[in-house]
Length: 488
Image (cartoon, rainbow, N blue to C red; front, side):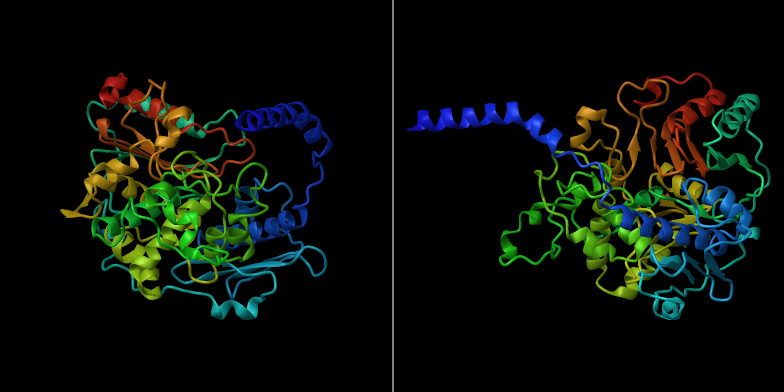
């Protein structure tokens, strides 16, 4: 009987191997069934980018169209006008015209930046959106010395640093062969001091742009603070109420997913942002179309054993953020937490962490800030988690974010806990370097062996081929020969 079952199973496998390619060829879909949603998301994306460009970044309409919207294939309108509305009094933007693709709207909210509304909402709904009204930290940053403030005596390289090589590295970053790689700013901080700072025309130290996924490294920092306090556990299940509600929720296999799994991008949950689905489903609906980021994050099915497969998904980060919200226990405490726990303490006065319209942080992407605030953030890690004598991030947490996720062993050990690591085989930069990374070229690089933080902000578009490790290599030429042994 067992032999018969085995033969039948083997025959079934053979049949599937023979006929699967033919069946797959017959059932290949060529039509983009997600096109209506992509068009809606495209409108919402432009609404958020325009709104934040104008009202978070204080950029002109011409600058927004020239750079913020450059990577959109077909932006709506031009600086001279089109099917969009800028409501300067409400600090809001609407993209689209009645009929066809829904008109999408985004509005600036105090302390948070711009928030996308749902397709059925109008400017009359802006007053119901969340906002964060906290007084700024005391003092005038212009009179407070760096890094707590912006008072800098000079940015000259110190002795032992080759000024010509540093300038050559800067030129390498700004003077790109590809017009699709647009460097907005470059900062090099050595020994805690700014030794190089450069901005593109129309950009200065106050200019805020979107961090994209560099926000994930901010999210993991906030989560790590709660882990250090014992309010969250790295290797305990997330304890979330998964969707859809199961008849027997106690048997939901997603209850095995831990905080470590989601921070390692190894939850095992269904892919919704990759493999042709980006800007069609998944987090795109929360980022750009007003859907709940929480409901979307909780709704994915488990289809791999947690911890066994690396899949870069925005919702993995947002599951960690949701667990953070539950640990904090109170909506207002949660809303104030990034400011009170991190930003205000290290002088990140220019940083706006946005939420969805329900008040849940989109800390996987939607943060607006400037280069100096990101340099401060990098310095916190370079200094081992200590700022002005106060420990904000534990040494254990820094070790966690810098440890390769086990599921990345076969792809170069290039990802840790919401931070990127030097991939295996790359020996032209120190192996102890680690980096944030965001779409369009947002990087904060920390190189402990050289007491170095590098910040590069960009508005890349098209193929977006800027290589942060190449940048690290070029900057390190100013510090002499670099060997892998220095980072061991």
